[in-house]
Amino acid sequence: MNKYVLGIDGMGCGACEAHVKDIIRKNFSYKAIKASHIKNQLIVFTESNLGENDFRMVLDPTGYRVTSFERLPAIHKWYGWR
Image (cartoon, rainbow, N blue to C red; front, side, top):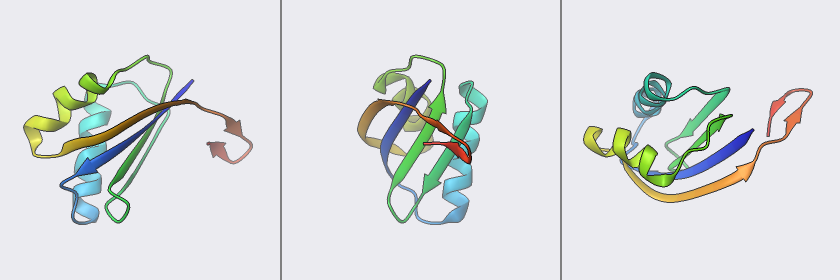
C-alpha cells in the first residue's frame, strides 16, 4: 500500500477539496483520500504505483497544480490508514 502526499495549489475552500477528491476518484483506484485547502495538501492511499506525472495529468487541466510530491509506505491502523 502506498501513501501519496501532494502539495496542491488552487484549492481555496471545501468545495475545491471535494472537486479535487472527485477528480482522483474518477481516475485512480484508491483506499482513502484526504484533502485540505488549509494545508494545500492532498493525501491518497492506494495500492497502485503512481508517479508525480500521473497526478499532474489529471489535476493540471482542471486548474489545480501539483507543487510537491512524496510517496511513502502506508500503515494500516485499527482506525484507518496512516
